[in-house]
Length: 164
Image (cartoon, rainbow, N blue to C red):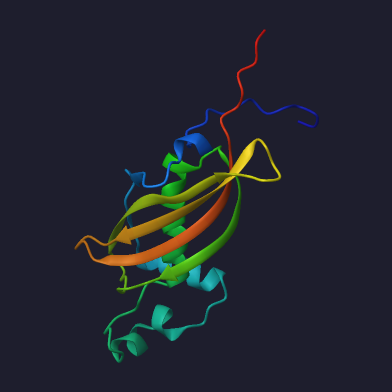
């Protein structure tokens, strides 16, 4: 429908003012990563790595089985964090800092994610926005840390109240 304005959506993310350094969000959603997830993501991203796709090859490695593609892990971790932190309140990702995968993730592993606000400041050039540094941490079902990722995002400030 050309020219029709979309209906406003409820905002569920947090405003810049709510993202105070030290705040930790324990995300409610958990996700089990399956063989199908891994094969589809790895194939779609044109990654031919045998360690993700070839069970026979993976059996001969130190892991003894295929690893979940680390980029799938990262994408899932960030995705899990969106609903409770940035849904509708983020303008854009500005960049990623440190990203680590301290333990492997395998088919059938379930990850849970927590996000810590590391830093937050108003934008110098955009008065209605600010920059937040998040640290996302993911753990498997055995509570092993499997991913740490720092992300900078441009966030909306809480809208000013308008008098009628």
